[in-house]
Length: 308
Image: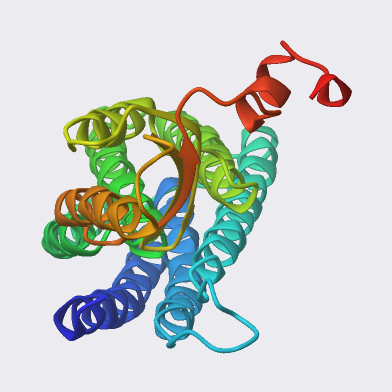
């Protein structure tokens, strides 16, 4: 990974931490001014983002460490651990909001200074949108799972900020105070779904789920373009942070020299890495037409290993 991408990820993580701290402070002021549960729910989310963003900052720095003798695939999956911790913080925040919301239905609390709360939440919204724009740019350049997961928090913040602004406006104009509690509960439910999505994505990478079908098909199409390739089987892949690991078996003329087979394999590897610079490719060379027990057979259940 180039140095520029590493710096971008670190800058995005640092910007996230700084923004989360600022949002937490100004939203805390809004809570004191208004007594709003929906503002409190948004503030709790920002507080969890402070800790989550700190975790992301550490994960990004750690995941970019160079390969070592004991970690020859790198440290990319630390970003998945970061994403799982963030999901736990989001879910915990949502549970607290749900609990407080149920309590407030039983014992309503009056709201005050809603106009000041609206102004503060609009400022929060603008800061959040600025951060998301930068994070999206960084994710596009680096493919960082940790930054993408962190950005998902702030996308939720945009929606929650808009909902809180609407809630404060409804209370200010029509004095419907229960609307604030309902808004907070809806935000809490949305946070739960968001936590589930982040967890599912992280677990897919941790359990070495294959790359997307579209990427796999594109790689196989590139393989077939190389002269001398007569077939391809036992393709498998996994992702670790920004790195993608590709393994495949190339079928070639069994009478070709080792030098020729190596040259063909190099061309295939070059095509793949030109298209996917973050990919590391391992190629096994097979004579075309031989009968053998393959990974494809094992997965599809077509053959018995002992028949070969």
